Image (tube, rainbow, N blue to C red; front, side, top):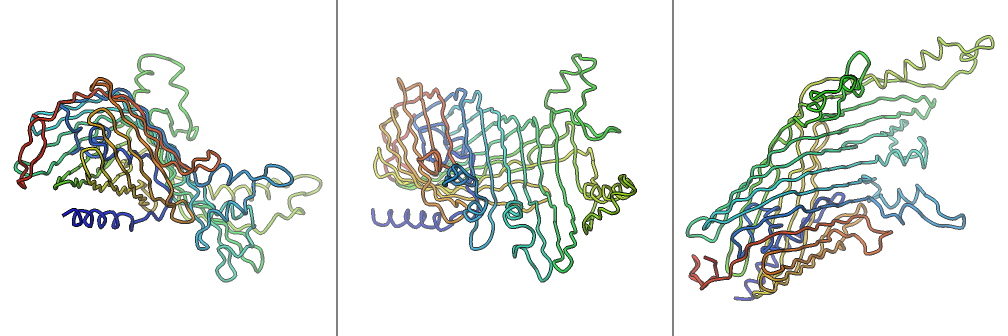
Length: 497
């Protein structure tokens, strides 16, 4: 029987590891705590998971911070005989996979969870949580670095006699700040060992700035060195920042501060609303627990406060054959007619359309598939697949993924230690070293303190490209296990009254 159980678990783990990531590393994670079934942290990632052996819990303010970088500090700042230098060619080599350039992606994500609570009534579970979310992402187009390193006559991007270098990319920049208010419900399906849960997330948008697409094509005809350029732009902004588009152009509306009043204060209150859903399920079979969840499924936030959408009007094309100094200087002075024509040609590239239409924008949708195997009442091994869809409106959808393996040690309801490792992709090869560690301990079976450090890409700070810190305090009302009850499969099972 033990051999059969082991084969089932190993097969499940193999399927997860087989789906190794193919893009930059995820951020905004707490994967190692997904299988901490005595902690409310698991409920955050799956609405069907409720702390074991507990009647209620209260989550006090908690802090969540993570970052991800394309390269470590020592990969950018190098040392030679002349001291510290930045070598673009070395950076490009580290960000190259099979001759193809990877994205240089910077991620910074913070969450500040405020008051939350949950309680159990027989086989039903209710929960509430609230918090502030800030998601920031920057993509630096590596084509720009390539141009700085090799110029526009390199073999890069060459097709026939034409060199086409795009100094832009999709998903260039995104900053999205919003409040989240979540209401959850879960219940155990009668006469089964399955639990299902659903959670409604009400979102209140504070600010969004997104550049979904930025294209600046520099096209060089190698036969006559003529330079042509085209642009493509899709950017969005909305929120409490008083941006307006009027006869003075796109600007911050400072007029509202001239006559300061209660109405001015109300203008800074967030008015953009939205919603998403979380769905989760858990199934217990002998010593195994299988679970799945999908978070933030839905339209996201409807940005209605100070919305602006800036897009390029068309495929403007500018040809540049150089500057004739004989035309610039005419009879000892500057020929403004010639210079103005040059200026008009360049401004044509920046010809944009500005609209004040309201728009929807999604928040990242996450998918979790988990499996755990309890070897005894103290030791458990687990595996977790985590996928994430990066939102956009006018660019390709990006799917990121990782696989986490962890071991959990529990000492009744007093202490839980967890160690794990995530398989990610660092931009050059599958990275099998992203360790994680978590500790959770209870004081007097009431106060639960926890700290987690995961997705640490390297113990050496100068080489670290990612890290995630998560810490806080909970109040958990534990109950002692009662007499064994018989599960739907006829096996003894400990439950609480």
